Length: 419
Image 1 (tube, rainbow, N blue to C red):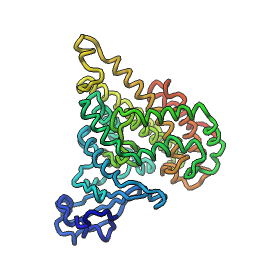
Image 2 (cartoon, helix red, strand yellow):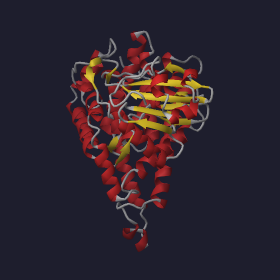
Image 3 (tube, rainbow, N blue to C red):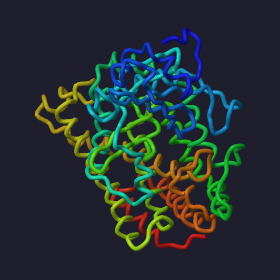
């Protein structure tokens, strides 16, 4: 790369000249950089994303920015997050092959990753807003969450390898700090960058006056910051999944860290629930059918997760936790132990789910499911249902039997006027 040892943000105009010597990129799009066409497509807060097209094909170039685009230079961010995204993608690819884009090149100095161009994949959140379905989505996501959770933990990994990985990802301080603030803390007080839809003030005031709720949220935060069970994606939602009609991939793990095994699937379910609650503003005659499809996805994700987790427990439990010497080798069934692990995992997941439902309406970074609803008078009642259900999940996390019980709660709130 001709840019040398000093970071410099790419642009549509400068990318061909600066990356012309990156053999991995040239091999995918064409050797002559003069023939490349570059399009910037990034719509997130933290990165530049370009599609590079040439006579041989296409590739994605993703480069970290040294600040949050939504806020600007006043919120600086370390470029090292690209290093952790690269390492997270390589681990996810090993733990669930085919689930993430293929990586072709990584430049740590330029905080830059060249990766597979996914086509005709689109961001899942946009497909949900448009009322589209994805065959196999739930099974894919359930298995992805189970495989990365199990194979990234000491249920499977050698203890030394796991501890070394925890040490590596422990350097990713500033990015998880965003989660610690925006997800777990800011929604529950008047933080500087908070905002919420006009008309929600009574609901928000009730949430912030609920001391028991805030204690439970802080207990969840305590588990998040202190429990290094497995490598988590850290920001798994419908905007970090790309899908066709029958194929999906997970992208953007720059928030990766070692954390609780229930974190990713809890965040994922929260975003499906928000898609569910937002649907009355996006759908017509097919509203009920499509909402039920979304709830079916949630149930199937959780079923797929649990089936795969139990399968891995039976076939890949090679770490220091719950070893066969304590169970099978003595002629004893380890299924109750697996059940206990899963019970704790789901308790965490439903708490994280409720918290994510709150932060996406109250904190800095909202989601398009609600934000695309232009009329606040239409948006506020839908967000209110979402906020109240989030509180119920936090309060009842330890007592929820399964995803079917969660979906039953969603149906109840969906039929209520709560404003």
